[in-house]
Image (cartoon, rainbow, N blue to C red):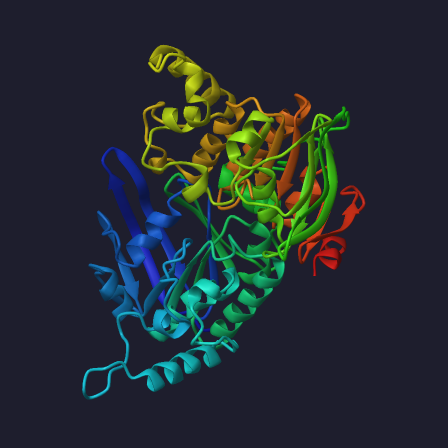
Length: 496
């Protein structure tokens, strides 16, 4: 049998930032035309390794070998010239421009007189999308696309640069199940055309669905590369990522439920959601499933006063309330953890302490003068409770890992002493260990008598964490399921 030729080798890669050793002698080999997953907890070195490959960072030591030849990648443009493209976790598109303009941004075809050659632009964009077997209107402004349309536009842009190696960083973080299947179809098509995919995801079920092999990094070091061929399972892979055996990271379901905390009757915001009726009891964790665009997030925002509703009634602890602003919601005991951590959950440029006390600052400044010692003690206690791992309360949130940013966002709402928690995609984009810690925090809230509504696109998460499951489709609740007997197919049946 002929020896497998690698398209890419990263040999003994080292990278440090000040006193932090991000990568230590990491060696990874990539075969042509494979889907190769790079997995590990936050801080394992995945992003640093990919940024070295696409030219954003330079390694302190080590060699990159591309098509058997050593190369030095001094910047992103050189990486693109070598056929290496990346699709980042956060969208980098220009919303007001069309799909075609975004695909060829900075490379618009010109007529001899120097004007944009619109006909050629649209033809070239159509050709790229045909290669991906996608039917998308190239003249449509990106701002009118859903998450899946934006994601494939990002991929189309990389493909238009003739990328032979394509890095996908958390490509399904904002996609629902149907959109994920469409993305996987695109990935399989690219693989059939000989494109090599480096796939970064915290969703391990996806790894076993789409990847040929997986490389595990831990604490900046190479752990191993494993064939995804049925010989390993999720428990094995998680054990390699966290460095210990990991059987089940979901807490035991809460069984004792108290009085009704929240009741919603006939809540409607046309045409987004209609006639929404449900209740939450103290001690319950109710999952809210549904595809992206089903209205789940807009419903949560309406309950929190961050978006309007046309009619319907909201009751907290038996008292009807009218929620017209987040402040009114907080005063009524409702807190909302946004799915958009970076733009709505935390203020990245501010320190941990200011993020946590932002909604309750008046508690520490009754006469307009901030009592720093009281605030500091309060923040330290909450950081201990949610186990924020940092250099201290003064560290800026933007320098924390994704999991620790999410803990800060949750701690901010714990500070309010709310009794109804609307948790929108609480574990999106964080590693397996941080997910387990978030699950334990949610379970602790329920045990303490809070009522939790958890919105998630991760169906196994919904099935394992919830005491009841509500499913939304096209703005309506289509059914309620018992998670102890329901299957993923049952959830999808109600969601599509």
